[in-house]
Image (cartoon, rainbow, N blue to C red; front, side, top):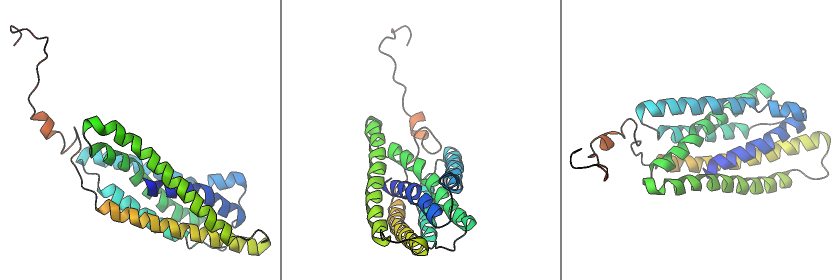
Length: 218
């Protein structure tokens, strides 16, 4: 979840800045240029949910998601002053697919890895980790970007500096995602509760009769 927060906050903050400063986009169009990343999030989340509900398998999605995040952020780290909007959009689509496969599956993993009595605590812990990762990421990214972009830079020198700062940000993000990929490989997949592979144990449990039943009803 921390890796997801790092990618989300870093991309939403610094990709529009790169598009405005280097690619010449307006403030409005820079928001629209994030659609290649946002649309795949919805599509991937929907597909992952469908497959998980039918097969009961979910470990593959955090693994694939963090792998796509690592590849996508590494690709974004190669952006320069000559990178086209179309190429940047293709790389953002990779990041969007990775986010879609990872975000909801991390919540499912947290729910399915604890006892029912601890499910509330597990759910409550996911958002703080995501927010913490995003907050730390923004702090580190701000330091990297400020160091790369001098306050006196103007014109082409400013565009080059912004491209360099963006490159440093996404190289760092790729490192965090790579760590997330390794951790995803270590996840132990537990059968889903009440779903494929997870409902057999529930079906074999004896039915407990209500205390209000009379002996005649039994």
